[in-house]
Structure formats: C-alpha cells, structure tokens
Image 1 (tube, rainbow, N blue to C red):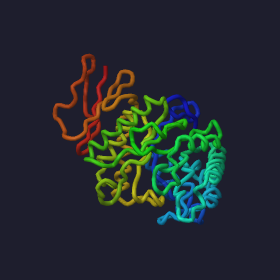
Image 2: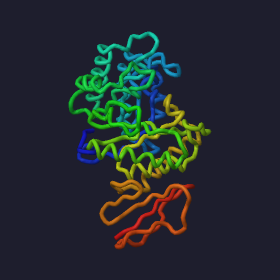
Image 3: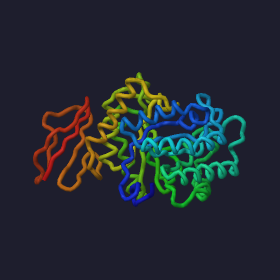
Image 4: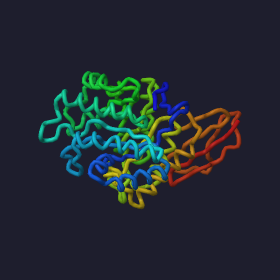
Length: 335
C-alpha cells in the first residue's frame, strides 16, 4: 500500500477502501483466541470489506485490556492472518494512553510505541498506520497537538501511509498532517443530514490534496441509540454510495465490531447494505451527490422519493434508477 496523490494504491491499482471496525482483533490473537479472530476476519472478507481497523493497545480500557507489549507481540501473527484472507490492516498505535496508571502519557513511551508498531506495520506490507484514536479524547494523553504528531510521525518509515488521527471537528484540518487523513463525522442530527455531512470529507481531500477516510461514523447495532447507533440498513447503504461518489474511503462501524465479534443479524444486514451501496456507485469518481466517469453519470437522492427521478443535463439520456432503499435512490444515465 502506498500514497498516490489523493488516493492509496495497492501495486499499480487504485485501492478502494471498504473498511470495518475490528478494534479487538489484536487482543484476541494476544490472548490465544486466534480461531475467533479468524472467524471475524473471514466474515469481513466474505462480506466485501478489505480493511480491518485494529487497536494495537488499550490498557485498562474497561471493555478491553490490551497492554502495548501484548499488542506488539500479536501484530505479526495478525497481519499474517489478515493477508491469508486478502485483507489490509489499519493499525492504531495509541489508544487509552491517559489510563489511570499514568505509564503511557510521556513522550518517550509515545515515540517508542509508534516506532515499534510502525516498524511491524511496514514489515507486514498489508498495513497502514493511524497514530492515535481520537487524539482529543479524554482517554488520550493530550495528543491533539500538531507539533507532537509531527514528532511521532518522524518515528515511522517514510514509505508507510500514516494518518495522525481524527480532529475534534469533522471539518477541521488540524490533524490532517499525515500522508493521508481520517475524519470522525459528527453523529448528531437526523439520518439524512448526517449522511449529507460526509461532504466535509471531499472538501478536506480537495483542500489538502490527500486521501481521506470516513473513519468512525455512527455505528450499527441491533437497536438504535440516538446519536450513537443506527439500525436502518438504508442509512449504511447511503454511506456506501456517498463514499464512492465522493471518492473517499469509508469504514463500517458497529457495536459487535468493537470486540471483533461477528455481528448480530441486524448489524450484518447493515454491513451488507454498506457494501451494496458502494457497489451500486462503483466506477463513479468526484462529486457530492452526483458523479461522472467517462460517458456515465450517477446521482444519489436522499430523503423523500420522487417519481420524476433525476433531471439530467442536455446530452445525457436513458436515466434509470439502479438501486434503492427506503429514503435512498441511486440513478444513472449515459451520453
């Protein structure tokens, strides 16, 4: 994997990022549960995902307790298992550095952790690096400092794609100093306004000239939780379509994905809808709610359906609806 302009490339091919949260995978491998790790990775690959977002540490995390040493020890094996299933890993070097013992707050440790995780990631070949999960969060040791992030990036092999972590605001450029950038889109507001907010990803990519990933959007769950989880497959279908129209990466987030457990039935349906949406707009490039590639165009309608469909500019014809969910329609035309 390498940076190629405003994209990532795998070999000579542009890489189309379809990620899935898998925070607990390194913990499973570290604690002798490789079978469970393989089961999740196999599910993710069979569903259509190609990137696993994994934490390399989360000491005293409450729901998970993975020390930096155990995480590093597990990474080579995890990268190997992922490669066997045709998957890439987005490894997050720093998480929960502000935990109660205070052992992981100092810069010497931060540099060591980033250096060692970056080294293992670069050796694996099927890995990209995120320095920190939500550097601004109270669980982190005040990591949302661009100067600190620059120093940490100096510990990383230069050819390895690296993102600093998400900024506090989803339109902020503050944490976009890596070779690619990640954004955590705000989860508040009504469903369709939230999806439309993904436009900030394209704006950030245009402003920085870097590949951008929708890193941790609202997650799926078996039941909705306002501002935190959704259970409507159409919302994740729209996320998949938008990521393809905007030409950005996107990661499916879900409740059961946190410990890297194969999701429940509603979450699996949402995951399938995300991949279906991505495929519905496959081939599109550039735009916000409309995109073109060669002699073909796509448009995405969010909210209320319209029997009239899309009004196409002169020279475009044969417009038809090619995919739909409640509140979401994808139309295409040719010239």
